[in-house]
Length: 71
Image (cartoon, rainbow, N blue to C red; front, side):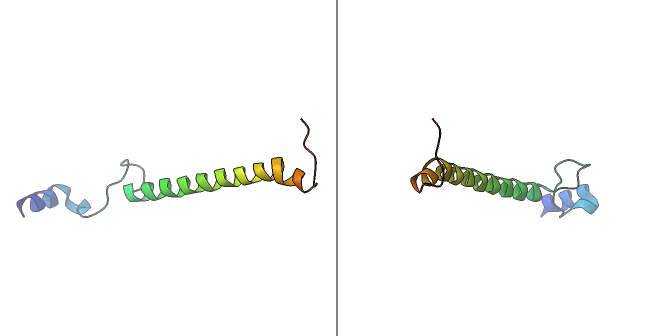
């Protein structure tokens, strides 16, 4: 109990609130972690879409006679 009381007295109004990344940026650490998770998931979706499009353009389209590849 002594440690919690000391922390509460030293932090004052900020006790129990999430810590910010930087004092002048209004983003908490948990919000930054959520942002990283979201952008990582978006990057994987983009990579997957790029691979699907490449396979379609390179192999599926020519196989069905939709177009011809040169080279």
